[in-house]
Image (cartoon, rainbow, N blue to C red; front, top):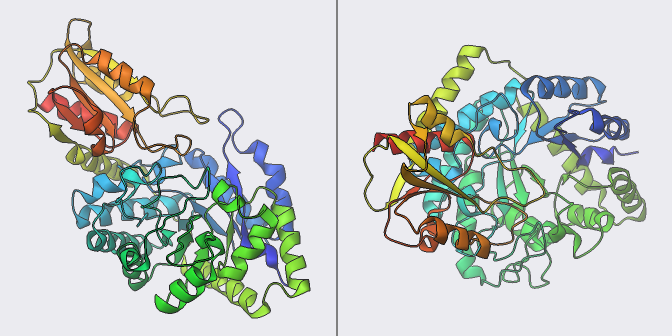
Length: 471
């Protein structure tokens, strides 16, 4: 009997109060099934490292342990280094991109992560796109391709597998595949721009490519998502682009993967189309049973399954073993992350003001209200205080506008409530610090100075405070 469960990568999520304990019963069931790896969300450095050791010890075969580290390992793991978004780093040049990838990979190995689901090589070409934005390196295909190739080479040189996503491109959508199946009607000729970064990624030897739950009728007239499309995955990615690494689905819990069929049918269709690994299904046992039925009925091709199983093993053998970092190395990473963050903050409008002696701080939070907690909004004020600048109603007004990429929003613009709050905050002269895409400048009224700090993470809040005080 073929170990089809090895083609499934379930999720493990950290609980803020109980750690990984609530997830462990499901993990034990998944290991007993023989899954091929996991994607880990959240956790603390020591707990994640212990978890990956326990997973390896409890598995019948080598596991591929992955995580979304687009903004550095600190994006998911407390105690590791958060980095600016890809667009912010790319604005500093390709050497900065390579440095960010190296830091990410070294810290991934520190906690036993063998596969990083990055970089995003989609193009930031659609202003109404609600989910890519600053996750992309930019909008120029050639520049994105070069940056992606540098990121991949640096990451994999440090012993960690990279994964270019989301094939054949999520940058042109006006909908979010977390919530629905987006359809991009752009003709094939124009889509060559979107494919160029993937050509660069394949040329750089990228270990994996993640599919988009997006339909491209110009690439497959049937209108199915790329995850379920043999013309996109087999004919285009495998044969035309000559990619022979791992093809992994985006998360199967996303509505873009479920609208065409249920989870079990969709999993079978993904393998039929050319995917190797099935990421984050909700019902792991049900999906494995569906694969076994598909094999027994002949719906799944034996040779294709053997090739996928072989690719998974080859990828795991390619990844380096965990390697613990000492405190000095981690501190060097944090220092470099701070330097990159500070260098990336820039003025979008107006002239920098003289450093304030006291600040009247106003927060407009367009990211609040979703299903997941946002990063604490206190880091900016803490950095001011550390540098001797207090908060006072009569001080210079500074408005912090948080508008990051969030899967639950379904929009790329500010909400009506945020626009109203911003208008009120700007009735008095103020400097605005935008923690979001530079395009949002168009939604900030008045002539006052506007700084761009890209994302609301603590590293960017502190960088913005330091740059503001530098004048």
